[in-house]
Structures are given as structure tokens and as C-alpha cells.
Image (tube, rainbow, N blue to C red; front, side):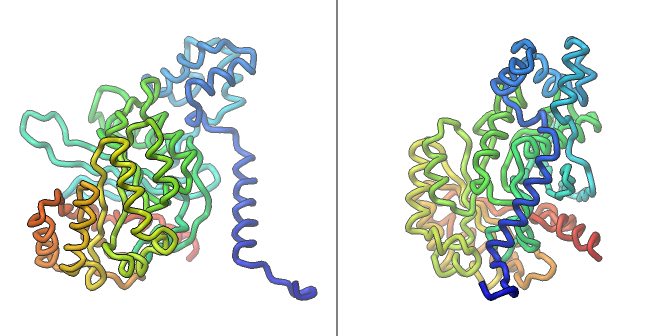
Length: 390
């Protein structure tokens, strides 16, 4: 304290700002998408309703595509009115959309009820053969508004961390994508018009672990979206204690680690999380997860020119991947306006991949997707924030 001229520390400001946002969110009714079958049944009983109504309501939401309680015609009118008083059915609102026809990638900027902006992306893989009715779709979702991890190459954190999404807001992204696909008539079998879910959008999922896991259980549940656990991947920058918690979780979700550096020197340069959880802690935690779940993990590695694209980095990465029995996903950097990083040349990318292949490391060099639509995480949101504040 310094008399009447005391200044708040950045931590105090962040706490006060975060508290203000939480207070604003408390002014909204809870989203119906936040409820599990068990919690909804308990909530109904507390209101004097029959618990079996929970199964009916969830069937209307996830199987019959209802967009309001009024559509749930096998519920008594009084029950529907009471539900509308208690819960919000509002989906995420579309603010902006970008698509790239060449690779059928779509990126959506969605507004939550408090005005917060988040992104989700639909990535389509080409059909394997002419007999396939459609391309395979992967939905990439966000778990936070902004990001506090501070990765130097990422657009998500450029405007700072705002707040965590709750479970309903995470599920709402999936519901939006499902309705978007259904509107196009691309599939006739309900909401699950996608094959995989990857939690690789804005934010660090393991810093919002409780809401993320609840949302993914809803996505996985037979009464929910019914997406198989092994078709759901959680990506983390390397929050070691939470990786160990996931290792003990019975759910068979997949794990991807955003490595992006094969030595502490390189990784700490571009990923501040490595200073708290260096490779000596991260690799054993990843190995524990892999061994307990009996599944291969993925090492995500964004290739950045003159930062981590050396062949020495490739050799070190191969050592880590072989120790973990991991698959490596090489991702050429998508340029972000205002950041100095560039992607390596195509020749350098192939040389890097060759080092891994020579060491018998399963590796994929990702075909460029979405570069023309700001598909790198956080770019579309950042561009629209700049417009709104201009």
C-alpha cells in the first residue's frame, strides 16, 4: 500500500475481472446442455416432477433435435413451462463463418450469452473410396475464452484469458455444428454428423478440467451424442498433474500433447508451461497415461522456421516418440498477423519427416487445412475483436 495511490497488482486485477465475469454469468439461467441424465433427474425430482422425465427430455434434445421445450409434446404443459423458467435452451449464436472450398474446412465464431466469443472448426477428411457416402468429419472445440498459457506462436492468448466455459457452453458448440450439418441435409441420423471430437480449440482444456470432462461425458453418453470415447481426443500443452489425473480416469478418451519442442531450451522459448512442467516431468506423465489406457498418444509438433525445424530437433523428437510409443503429428505453422514466426519450406518439412520415418516413428505431415480462413486457433476471434474495438 502507498497511501491513496495504491495500485492493484496484475493478479488482483485479473481476479477482480474474472469475478466480475462470473457474476455476470450468474445472471443467466443454466444451460440445459450442462445436465447429465443423473443431475437432470435429481433436479426434476426437486421440482416435484417425475425423474423418468429426464430420459424423455434428453431424447428430445439429442435424438429428436428439439430446439425448445415447447416441442417436447409428450411432456405435460406445466412441466414444459417449468423447464423454460429454470433452464436456458439458447444455442451458441453464429457471429462469423469462414470456409475454404478446396479442403472443405469450416470455421465458426460463436457468441456465448455474455457476449464472449469462441471458435470451433469442422475439418473434413477426403473419402477413402467411391463407396463411401461422405467424408469423415472432425469437430474441434474450445474450452476457454482466450487462453492463459501464453504460447508465443498462438493467436488464442493474444487478447488474454477471459474466463472458462462451462460444460453447457462446450456442448453447445457441438450442438451448433450438428444443426449446421443437419441444415445442409448431409446426414439423416440425428445430431452426430461428425466422426471425431478434438478438444484442441481455444484454451487449455486441463485448466478447465471439470467442465471439460463433464461436457465430454455428455458427448459420449448413449443418452447424449453417443460419440465413442476413443473418437474423442483431449489436447494439452502439458499440465502434468492433470495428465496424471486423466491417467486414473476410467474414460478411454485419447490424449494429444502439444509438444512443439523436443528439448527444454526450445520448448521453454515458445511455451511458458515448460518452465513449470519441463520434459523430465511431462514425459513420465505421458507414459503413465499411455500405459494405463493401453492407447497410443499423439505428439503435436508445429513446425516453425528456425525455431524447432532443425534435424537435431527431429532426432530428439524421435527419441521421445519412441520412448512413449507415440504417433507424431507434424503441423506446418499457420502464420498469425502480428507474430514473427514462419513455416519452414516444403523441402525442410519433408527432411524433418524423413528423420522420423528412418527411426521408425509413426508420423504424419498434416496437409495444409484452413490457412485461407484463419483456421489456426484464435485467429478468427482475434480478427473480429479488432473490428469491434476499432
